[in-house]
Image (cartoon, rainbow, N blue to C red; front, side, top):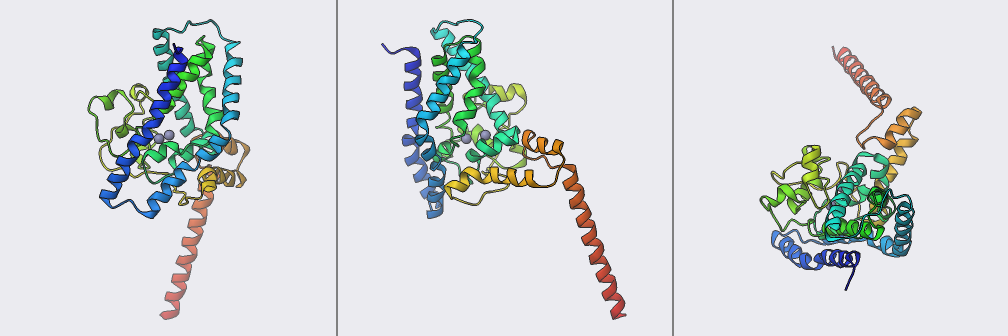
Length: 308
Ligand SMILES: [Zn+2]
Ligand SMILES: [Zn+2]
């Protein structure tokens, strides 16, 4: 009989395979709306393109996670036996840790730029968006699960539960499912996750949960879907080039770090949210705008004087 971690990996596989169940419905819905265009299909391929480095580096990523979790297990404060009850507890803990991970992915610009922004840069929302995950994520995200190993859960169980939390999110990347009533208040659902992918100001930094949306309701980051959603980044990347998909936000961060700024401001650029702009830049921008307005005003006065 399969062990609990083995059964969890079967569940993860089944959840991931939902891609093949949903994609025909999505294509049909898009066809009916008249939005199944050459460009939309290209965007879907751009979203699937991060699978290439992820699959090529699969063995390296698995070795890294195994090493990390085994090293952490040597520091564990106790050993928790793997039973049905502790599996549910571990899954809840992994889901909470995923919430923290996901929130960090949005609120630490360096994490956002090197990894999580990739998932958000598509102006479309469908099953292919779930595949749009940077390979870098495989080396950053597992660190946030280490506390579950440190409190004594079997590293294999933690890996299995983390896999379920990630794989669960495949099915929620769809527009073919509307509101699900009370389920929207408990679980991360298509409706809740559409809000998360929105670039509208009222939706930014909302609905970070993996399986449960309860964490967002507890920590004040929950927002309900109230109408049509505009997807993507607030500054679109406007490219389907697979390399650009991976590096667009990193390029923007590097460009910002090269601009004149104090050391403290450069640290803030790395570790505060993506919206942070050093005061000196806004001051310089205001000075330039004032100078431009003054010179335009002078030119207007001069022209008026000449015509009188
Ligand atoms: Zn996100
Ligand atoms: Zn997503």
